[in-house]
Length: 603
Image 1 (cartoon, one colour):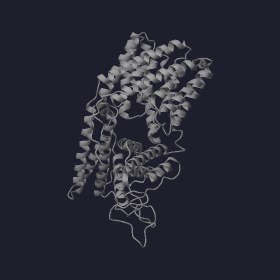
Image 2 (cartoon, helix red, strand yellow; image 1 turned 135 degrees about the vertical axis):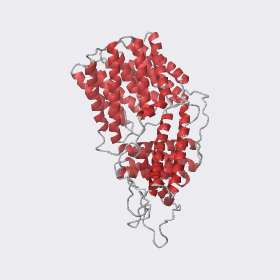
Image 3 (cartoon, one colour; image 1 turned 90 degrees about the vertical axis):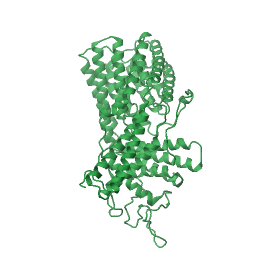
Image 4 (cartoon, rainbow, N blue to C red; image 1 turned 30 degrees about the vertical axis):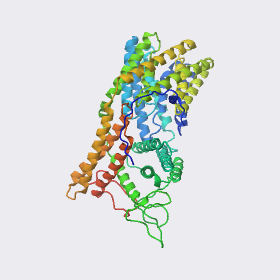
């Protein structure tokens, strides 16, 4: 397999039509769409009943937190949602206090830009996922330009907090019904992506490189999901880990993989039934071969035990790959045991990202003010939403944002007469826009923006109806200003060190793996040296993943070596398993029906 060595990726042409091309909707597009409706509706309807719909923007700030963490296991989702809600409340508190202390628009724009920079950096460092910092920036920036007094701020924060608690409950509601739903979906996506790559590689079709990159990305995302919970893995999660390793095997030997079997596993995983068994390399009881699939051959032959490769009805190289699977599972367990890096160390490399966000958002707000805008935060939020992994994607996001907002203001002009029929009509229009935005944004950002734009304009009417023409004109001008100034800031402020950090992290993993392998192979090595080597390698693997994830949110002149990152992780997992086995923590194959890994056991 060829190594994905970084290659030159200089920008020659910035796409326009391609940026607007629609993709396939997400497999679970309805989950965030329904969640946000369920989170927004009760508080808004309650305030409408009480005749205080003017307070709905504050409850909506908390309700929008239901958009986050849908790809995380529920144990990790609970923590992630709690931190998102706290982050939202922190940004809102700063905005409300600032709005209470001054009405100087330049000062408020500056505060909003600094908040946007902090929110961008923290969301990138914690890998919170879509919609990342954009919602937090929208909430805090909008609150800056709402007249406040210090006495009102605690009550408004309490409303946001109460709605945030309700959003947390909405986000966690599916847990009793499908406790492993996110892990199952991520595993199924990895299996389907591996099957697609196997089909492409077998048929010699064009686009094989793209299919391979997509498959590696899906496998990487599946491991991220499975490793998000750091406690001892359950039987279900362990079975899912084996399936992800089967996807990795298919990537390593696509000619020997059976796409139909991979897709069959993916379909079975998506449901609520039993996880399909791929085989346990240690099982030989009950008349089964070591792979746990099919009866033990009799008469014509016996199960292979020499580690050689043979193909079975799964179309995979069983014996050698099953030993590899066992090693990787133990390596994954060792990696799970390593505590994540402190947030401060993860924020350091993101300084250029924070500077770019602060500069772009501030300049966008200042230009908007100079043009006489009453709501400069629209330009600020537009600039904050642009920054993507590279300059081409940043340009594409700018095109998508502009087109989506322009179409969206036309939709608002059509919806506004209906929304102005009464409070209930206004709330229902807001709910419809919330649902439409999340249902469509997975196909293309601009399509979701068509609903996000009227949603933002309708929210401004919660305290009282405003002239439609003024709202439409202001939104168009601020969109153009924010997109233009934000893109200029993206070009001006770069982070070219991100690529070098990934290369250094890869080198560190290679060196740590070589050192651990030498220690494990040396019969005279002490238990303390073995423990130190294992922990050093596991920490290097975790650092590599964090560095690669941070770099994936930055643009530079060289492509991210994603395949090298995944291959380095696989090799490190196998070496970690060798160090664990050297300490006697891994029983020999065939001695028990299940393997165990005990972190911190005595050497």
